[in-house]
Image 1: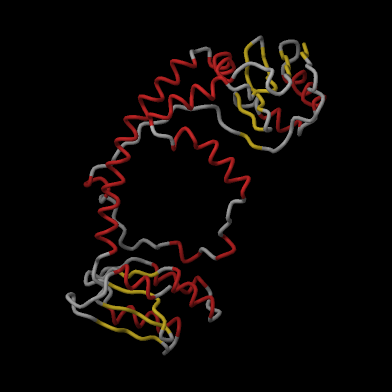
Image 2: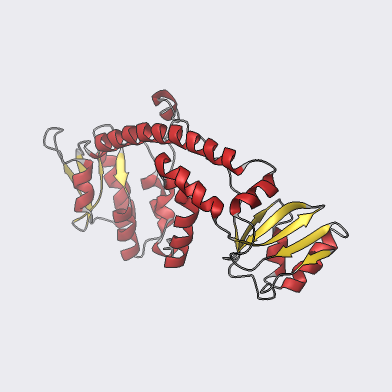
Length: 297
């Protein structure tokens, strides 16, 4: 096995275990038709948010957000900025190590410790755990006589564009231009989809709630005149405060348009006892769903 070991390569390369898939084309988003978007019947389905507890919610730290922003940068950029992004990214020299098999680049390592490559090969970086000698041994073990490990000083290796072309055998410039075209089309489709989603959300939020449910005087949910019961965190928080197991809330989070407000109140009584109140309104005087939700905050 040939080893090209450059100055500084003896320092541990492993900064974090972050396996990143190789650059992939941004797929053109398909905007579903109105008919397709409403084709799934939800009646009888259970909204599983009742099982989510505060300890299940993990907030990413500053480093994780920074990593996500970097990785998502090409997807969040406008198509007018994307060409500049690919040009700048292609000129950068982020790669500090490569694994070659029969002269072909099969995996590469970035200076920040992240890596990418063909399935099975890139994992050698993880297995080595930052140990250069162990990486050499692993490559020799898996690819005897044909494996090659090459390291570079930070900022002195090939450009990202050159690594892309060595890895893919195709032009980085052609790839970048294609991504800009795809992204432009995707951007337009996403604008249409966002507009439709916003309009639907407005209609949903403005739906009159002809029944409002309270437990101990606190709003925990509502229902429109079609029998759609709107419940969420206010109800689960009330259950937690009273030491009620989340599993007891399952039926309350199951969609059933045949239930009347009185039926739903009876179900709340089964869980919370007699401390349940039901207030009804005419469609003209009923508060909107958004207004009821703000009451439960």
